Image (cartoon, rainbow, N blue to C red; front, side, top):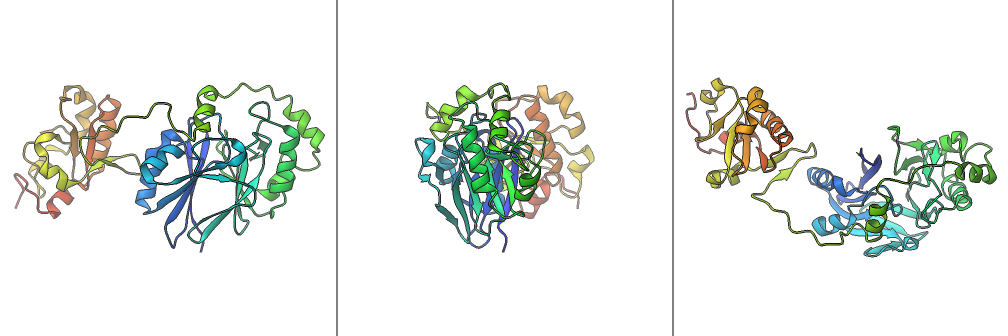
Length: 356
């Protein structure tokens, strides 16, 4: 049985995060998670009913901050980083030959230094998937001009630890700057312009020594933070929350109808349906402010901001868009009524002016 697998992009840093999970136990790992994408990843885990047991780093990144520490605090996962990376705060300092197990799935750790001295590649037990970090990229390889980079070492790492895998083993890198999602060992062994074909170690070292690339923009922030596994220097204050707002994988903040019924006086209800719908079969919630969705952009500034706003529509689609519009207008305390008036009525909650 194949594992659950998702490939997730952080567009700012062009980082690929990988979710792998066992179908039997629902235990999951995240490889190279990104701090700014924590809410997205947590929502996907919740929707798929998965329990995160590990976050795994392929190396200490220089272009983004990991969410490993945040995942540990919020989701109870353990942090895995190469022992050679010298990071603090890891629960699991992985070494070559280690096997990380989650349910029926397992990942073997292979040391692939050269981009940094703490680079590792995670290989699935069936040798059909390899998560190579920045060691081997799609038709490229990691740079070697900072962070203990060593072109000689990287060439040997790739040839000895990755190119020895089967041709049909899929390669999933930590980055791609052209939108490419994956490659294979066979493809890279034949076609990689830096490491494949008849390229020698001398060829690769000469190429790597003359790239003349600027350093990553987040280098001075990311490397120290990732040496702490993403833990901030100052402990963040607890999230200010006005209610049990959840966020879907699509990014929609939602609130439960039963909670809303008990706390109606604490929020501003905003019904974004057309006027005729307010007196239709579903009726409306008494006291709701009515602004049709088509008028909301023009009238968003007129809404008071002293209370959180809960948007309402028939089934939750238009009100989800209303939240997006209001967020773009600068409002922050927002939620969509989960299931809309359809769910509200199905729960037997009170309505006004419902048609017979």
